[in-house]
Image (cartoon, rainbow, N blue to C red; front, side, top):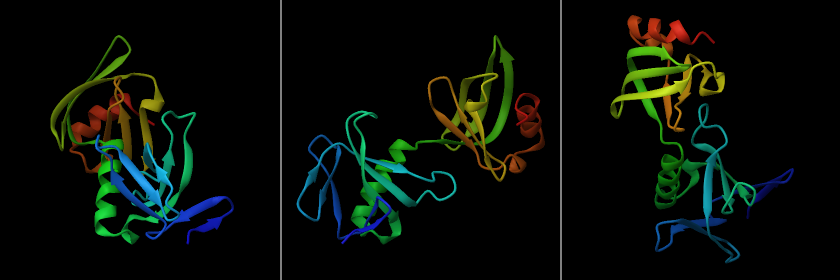
Length: 174
């Protein structure tokens, strides 16, 4: 049976089962037999604790979404269920990990990045003076969002080579 804490429903492995429909969309069945379509999964702590407190929601749009409950930890799920949720989370939180900054230049109010990532070399622009596009996430970690909404992460700025750090700090000083 699911625990409830001040309006938050904690879901355990016996409370919900996940599966894909014929179109490859995530669905779920609650313990009482209720079928849920358009299941969405969100990390409540995507940087600091990505595999704990996973929010399970339904709804086609942001205004229609409602939370079904939270899964305390992915580790508590059966392996097949954990795999399904990890796949859904990986799609939602797709991110490039930056290991080197080859160049970083400013032109017409945009920063143009040329970086080495875990997915190969990438070039992308970001808005120059918009702090929301380069967020310091603590412990030297920075999350960068380009003009198309793609996300890039520098796990620890201090672990980049000296030239990469200098290029970064020339424009981004927060």
